[in-house]
Image (cartoon, one colour):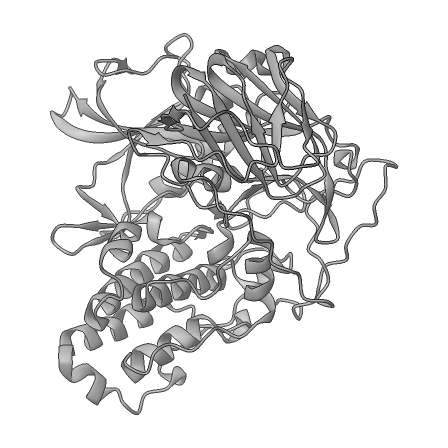
Length: 523
């Protein structure tokens, strides 16, 4: 279904303006013709609308959020499976929040003042208390999912991967959902997320508010292991003791000792916020015991998950492998991209030809150059903005970390989108391949495509076309059986969608996977 301003859903909601594109859907501002008010409409993306697992997850989001009526939770007003309009995907109608994500405030103003952090944490804790009381664990608390209204109200949004207590999972066994930088130690160890997991993520958010950075940075797997094994770096001494103690308690490794009483945390936060400048002196003697905890579901001691040995035997239902603690993983760093690739949002920049590792032949296939050949004569090219990135599998949808897909086009080659870990180079016998679709928004004549691959040695093809459903049979603009870390293509092809398709994985962190650290286009 093509979405555009004036499109009417359910005979009632007229789309006005697209606000955002997320991992599962698009969010539009719309006019509710019945009640005469502005609302937000979240619409499941077409490429996922036919997948039962994604439809079930989308439905669960609506049900989980709809059961919560709280001033700090974005309200759900309506839901529709899309069956009343031919070709229409499922959609849900939510409260339209006039504000900005906390992530934008952090990027612009961090470190934030302690009283502001108290307010944010207290309101988010109150929302989590309501969710947990209703039996819902959010599982993806992060700054981007906390919206700040102009009056200071915090709204918790995006229950897309939330799970109701006792509900069956809609994910594959062993697949870890959530954002790596905010995942709790117990989730990394393979245990089920609990209310304590949400509060650990809230502790990471508070830490980021106070320092402007997350406790652990780097490649996704290194971050996960750090959350599981390493102590959190100390907060600056300028942070008031009571706030420092609260954040430290939330970031405790043991979920049974972590504060989980959101109401008590919210009450304490409000007292400290109201105290203002006097709060630090009043709470100078406070310690973590000031934040009541309550037992959570019994959890086994954090132990490393056993990694599956490389094998091409019978398929395994467990896809994700967390490597053992022994031997600290090495953090992979990637060479910096040319200037135009890093600043992909710039209107026009000059292409820097130096540092190219591989070039494309006239036929489209590419081989690594033994001498680091340069591409072209340094002609000026214009960067092409990538509208969105989504994982892709042979059936058109993929659970290979959709929440991380944007890391492949964020202009930062130190971050990356990865597939899940598999038990063998042939995807553990579970599938024939996995990839990433890059949408340029419109058909574009691409002169250069630079791929920074997070796991070298994979077998990969690049396809280009104007129809997502037929990308695997679309034109192949490059292929290699053992991709280098930096791979440059010269397609000379006009297309909207570009598929980076991995047909064989490479060893990584004790298992097998593939990844894209950065994809940059120029015309």
